[in-house]
Length: 136
Image 1 (cartoon, helix red, strand yellow):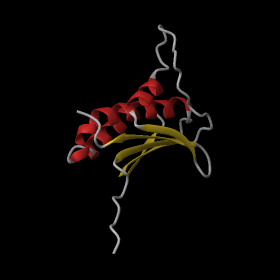
Image 2 (spheres, helix red, strand yellow; image 1 turned 90 degrees about the vertical axis):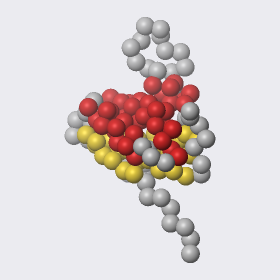
Image 3 (tube, one colour; image 1 turned 60 degrees about the vertical axis):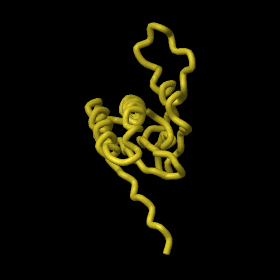
């Protein structure tokens, strides 16, 4: 009989700035125990950045942002999905006085891998993973 895989954790949040903290808290709670607990700070930061981008650039007020967290292949994967068509890109040289524009640079630095994946019906998912051996 095959091993049954771990069921991913899934949350949906309103497209509102307050959802950023709620999403970060949900991920922290999901990682509170076990070997992935040491990834909490990094995955929390990645969650904050990706949910912030989804709320700011990928949604309208009535939309939802979906967050999925799951372990696979020695990594913890996080996908943040929104209905927007705009694909995020890393700004490698944001102006020094810019108040935003560094979020994906942080994700790019922290994540073992990340990508923008189109969704079947509309929108996209930004998926990032951290190796279980990563973190302090």
